[in-house]
Structures are given as C-alpha cells and as structure tokens.
Length: 496
Image (cartoon, rainbow, N blue to C red; front, side, top):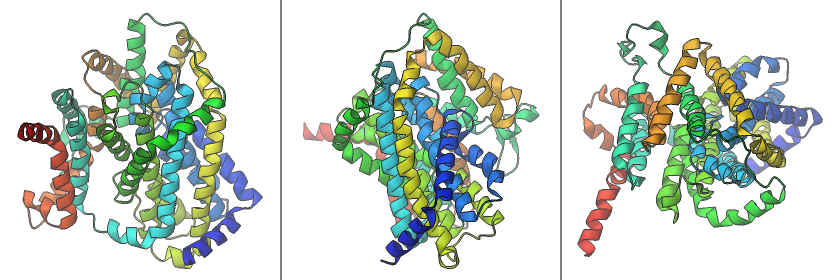
C-alpha cells in the first residue's frame, strides 16, 4: 500500500501541463533519434542532456527518460522497413520484421512490435514499482562468474535452437568473437590485431558493422535481383492496427516469456541487446512455427521487441536503487542525476521520494503516450515502402554513411561500413546466419572480461562456475541448451 500511495503522489507531480509538454517533446525527439541509425538512445540522451540543466530535476528526468522510450519504440521502424536497425537492440527484429514488410505486411509488423514493446516496458515499470528492494538485493549477488554464465546461456541458446545449420552458426559466431577481440585488451592493456593502425585501438564498433551488414548488404542483394524500381504494396489504414491486436492474445506465452527474460537481463544487467537475442532464440525454440522464423513470422517480431523494452526499462532499477547503471542510457541518466545534486542509491527513495515516484509515474504515462504516438503514425511509416526502390536506395546509403561517421566522427568507419556491406552480401549468398556474428561482436568482449576476471580470483578453475546455486544453475542450463540437439537425438533413440 505504501508503494501505491507514493505512486499516486508521483502522478500528482507529473500531471502538470509543463511536465506533460516535456514528455511529448521527449517522445518526439526520441522517435527521430531512434529512426536515425548510428545515434541510438544513449547518444541521443547524452547530446540533449545540456538542454535540461535549467529545468527542475523532475521535469528534466521526465524529458530524458521519454527520449529513451521514444528511441526504443522507433528503433524497430527502420529495422522493419529497410532492414537497418535503428537501435542495437533492434537487430533481432530485422530477422522477421523485414520479410513481413517485403510481403506487404509492414503495418502488421510495426503494430506487433510497438504493442510488444509497450507490454515489455509496462512490465519493467511494474517491476520497479513493487519489487525494488527484493530485486536490488538479487542484483548484488551477480559477480564475474554470474555474468559469464548469463552470456554463455545467450550464446548456447542460439546454437542449441538452430536445427538446420549449427556448424554455420558456430562459424558465424567465431567471426564475431574475432572482431570483438580487435583493439585494446581491457584486462592487460595490450594491443590485439591492430596491425600498427592507431585507428583500431578502439576496436571495430558494433553499430558500424550492423549498418554495413544489414543496410548496405541488403541494397547489394536487391541490386543483384535487378534493382526493383517499383514500391511495395501494402495496407496503410488504421484497421491494420485493430486487426493485429485481435491476433495478439494467441502470443501470450511469448509475451510473458520475453518479458521475464528482459526484466532479468535488465536488472542483472545483461543489456537490451542480449535480451532481444535471447527472447528471439527462446521464441524460436518453443514456437510451433519455429521452423518458419526468419521468413516473416509475427511472433519473431514480438519476442525481441518485448524483451528489449523490458530490459531497457528494468535497467533503471539498479541505477535508482543502487547507483549502478544497468545500461548505457542508465549511465547517462546517472550522470544527469548527479549534476542535479541527486545521489542515486537506497537513500534516494527516502530523501527524494517526490522525485523518484514522479519519475516512475512518468514511465507509466510516457509509455502510454508513446504507444499512441507511434501507432497513430503506422500508416505514415508503412506508406514509405510505396516509394520506388530506386529513390529510396540512395537515401538509405547516405543515411547509413552519416550514421557510421557519427559514431566516432571517423572516415575509417565509413570504409568499414562498406567493407561489411560486402561481407554481409557474401554471407547471405552462402546462407550463413548473421545473428550469431552480431551477438558475438556485441557481447564477446564483455564475456571475455567476465571469464578472465573469474579466473583471477583466489579460487581459480572452471569449478568457479558451479561455486554457488545461482551461477551453477545458469551454467548447467547453458550447457543443456548447447547440447539440446544431441539430447533430443538420444531421447528419440531411447524411445525407439
């Protein structure tokens, strides 16, 4: 009851014309930022942070958090329409979202992604509201072994759920691990595979690789098919939204499963990108139509978007309750809180109750308003596909180049983008999956750091990954997922 009373006071704080105006402005800016590949939520919040210094802290954090919600919602737009992830967590959305758009079902894919995003985000806010003390204590139990086990589970779930080409999946994953190793070793400080280039000290940026693999690679594939000059036909009326909503209840298991994965990965924190891949992999494993994933399944859009938003929202919990940011955006918001003289941690809920509960109330309102905003623009976004490809393709190339350059303001990243565009084209022609490579590139260095930190402790050895119930359970589950095809084969053999 105390939480409900505090939340009602939070709504009283938020429901002023000024705060609602800041909420809408933040959402619109977030949608614009999310549509531009290469920017993303963390960069957008960081760029616009100085604009809030003259605002009251509550209004400022409302605007910045709504920029984050807007960018998360909009990250799926370019993923579905053009196969270019606007957000790193939207990569998995391209696997089924873009095929749906190619089939003239862009409105259905966008509606499903926005609705799943809303469900995941709302679940994350409920988690923050009612389980803050319990979840905070649980997050403190995560050390390097636990983080490694979580990452191992993510990778093993991809290998274990691939029934067609597991060896190609492993090869693609190894390429990603190799790219993740380029640059400076974060443990020893040594240089790896820089070949004397100082520009490679920072490594190969994930966003540059993604923009090349998916954006430029898709354009090369389209050019080989004859440079389709016509646009895509598709329904662009609001009836598509209602028709899609009618089918959503049958995906309740996917929504719940992806929400649980996302909240767990957000609090621990594993990150929205890892959550989206894990949500997609589990949905593929347990769905009746799992073998059709990658060809245009609505469930393949719902799962990653729900998990990503649940993770992105719940990542704010350890930031508020412990002062430990659970994501890059949470880290930027943490800096903003300190600039405003607020110290995140357990005492924040006691000393700044009005601020904290005002922020939580704004999360509820921000997600509702954000859902209405993006759903009302579904016809507009779907209509973009009716523009002839010959007009859209050059615009996409320019936007991709701008996005790649803006990551580090380096021309080398533009050349990398073009290089990985060719690599993406070749991998697609050879039927190598891109998802494992991207996942390894994103999480490879973090997984390596967690493993090496685990080995530096007093009790070195692989037994550290079974040193307590939590890490032992996660590690065992990861190994089961890795060898799941073998387990299934043995089970069928025994039954015969």
